[in-house]
Length: 555
Image 1 (cartoon, one colour):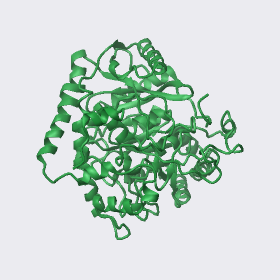
Image 2 (cartoon, rainbow, N blue to C red; image 1 turned 30 degrees about the vertical axis):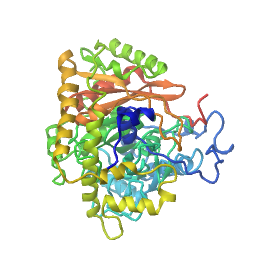
Image 3 (tube, rainbow, N blue to C red; image 1 turned 90 degrees about the horizontal axis):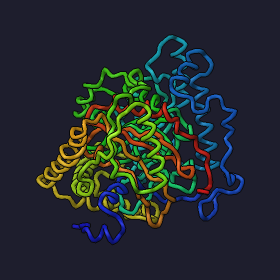
Image 4 (cartoon, rainbow, N blue to C red; image 1 turned 180 degrees about the vertical axis):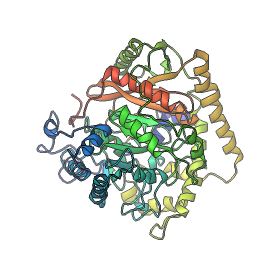
């Protein structure tokens, strides 16, 4: 069995926490389009030195919110079909050409027909739900029982058409949404290699950061992050095991919500971890993220943990947003998660000042203990759960899918090495396959995860300082995409909330050299509604988000 010793982590310049973060939030190789040069830099006629003009100043629908678009549809000022066509045109202009973001791997061939149906229903007075007529992009590891594929970015699943919608997709349809397409991701949600680079999949190539094109979009929900930031859909859905929403949302200047595990069902989503996986919204504003949360909740018989989420089923996440919610709140600062970049520290300091000015009491420091020890048991848990979960998922796929187990996936990658592994390998898949059926080691590792992340971690910190929430920097400035060496992760912390299954919300707090930086609000289980309101109050006080400019490079 392959093992990683402490000396191996140190020799490679990666501590356990960084190694685990990289494992879960990254994965990339740049497939250079024909119109780009050998370095992947856009041709002169595609991107100017200062950026790309998308004529957004003349686009009256640019970055409108869910509520604004619904209002326009209700008044007859725009139709769902026109809105859907507008997004399809932007995908063609910005994702397939121009800056060539490669964030959308597939558009729904039935999107316009669905939009027509929603328009017909609206005229007849039948409104399905709060997302009626709103185009949504979803990550390519979420099942859709339609003509789109669900592949997790792997060529091994290139012909996979799901027989049944994921529960969140079923709820999207019930709420009236238009499924616009599937977004690119770090292949297998980045649980493949220790040397991956975020946002790459064999199916979709390399997703690019719309703020600075030679920078990385983070992952694994890289495509959703890049696409929603660029206004290729109104809102989007990603998934997270540890960091795969918070990191790409923050790096792409978005609001990202990792809910309490169980708030949304996970059935029909290609899995990594039964204890940590969750789908979640990515949006340009807190209000838009909140608009997605409640409609997609529900008790799903295929996911027992979703029954836990029914305790919040009556929550109106939009109505509960309060611009004054920071007043009187006690906010702890996880100071030990900062200090990795002086420019980020400056922006973080300004964010804390804004929180204080909004009426909150700042407790600084309020560090979460155990950050240096939690990574090892977490990784062990993920290896066990990934093997079991993926084998179960693949066993349900139809005859078009030839791989029926993790072992088959590993063999496929070896046969297709030139296409599947041109830059980095699959050592994490191999380590997961080597896990034996015994549960004793798994139970021990999972118990240690709960002890460190909850009992001695978030719960202890909240209780010690009598806090409503903990804040920390969400991310470092985006690193340069590097297909030979992988990601260069230096800052940001998502592990405690992820391992605990607790909620966290990232919201833009500023920019460093034109690269977005986010701040995360973390709280106990089922504090989703409070965290959303605190993040909303911060957002309204700072208005920190900036639209991307598609710059060639920093400076």
